[in-house]
Length: 166
Image 1 (cartoon, one colour):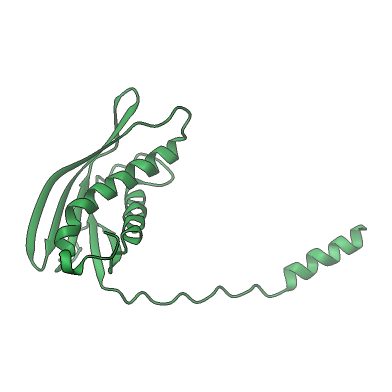
Image 2: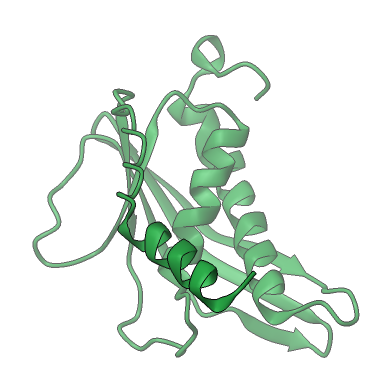
């Protein structure tokens, strides 16, 4: 192909209208507020702990077919009270042994105005040799989200309302 034909192809590609993204259907499921109370000091990672925790809880909710949509928000002075909410006070992930990382977070749940305090949830992870840092963090937060879900699921979804596969 000569340079004139290449130029014509590039120009045509740039001038064609971009395909409009498909419209996303609105999620009409009830919302489950997840309020993350975190330290204002950030670790400097590209993805902070709040985002990792949100992604992990979204994944667990989807895996367990929860009939709610997770709406994560950072705790702030103007955060409204929710009738039903999960509140998480995460600590920074720590390396305790040379090959062990630990997530700790205090977990509370309010359902229909009734408060439940689960105390500190702990999840330990030992990465494989050569496993990348971001992959390790994703697995730690996913494991922590599953541990939290194990605690809150029976109260959020009593046995008769529990999603199939839970």
